[in-house]
Image (cartoon, rainbow, N blue to C red; front, side, top):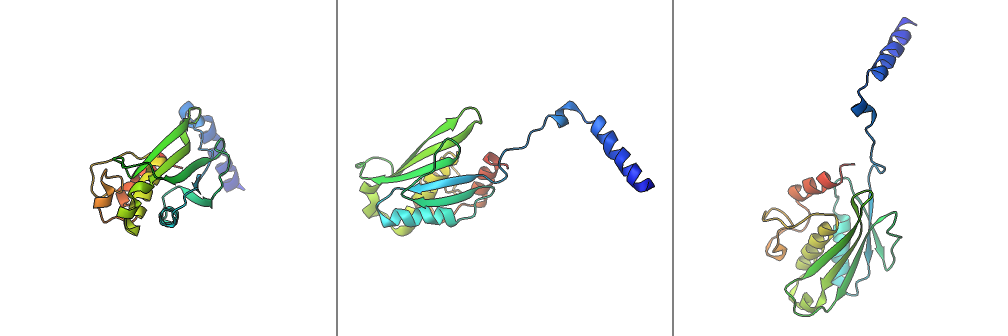
Length: 176
């Protein structure tokens, strides 16, 4: 009985003397956020690339693949993939996204994959391009590091999945 009383008093003392900073810490709402990858592409090769991204275990992020549909972006993080012949541009893929200012996080992203260049890609190039753009949709920017799929010229690398560096960068943005 004495041990129980002593334990209760210790817990009570820690509660009373907790600093205001410790008392105001608010945990994130989600322990492991879901990101919906919504595939609206026509080219099978892009679909394989998107599925490969989903298959790669990303730290602290659960990727849910959906073909041809998307949940509402207001309460979910949604990434929409499209392929189209955008012409002979200087890009293979392009990503834009919108932030929810209240929570300061990406809520919706659009990934455009340039079908004009598709005949020049092999399956691994498409996978690298798709992964590169998918990581943009999670908030990662270009890097000069050649050990990252976020290297500006990703098709020149022999990387087929996120590297340790990429995973650490994702973990910094999704620390849940």
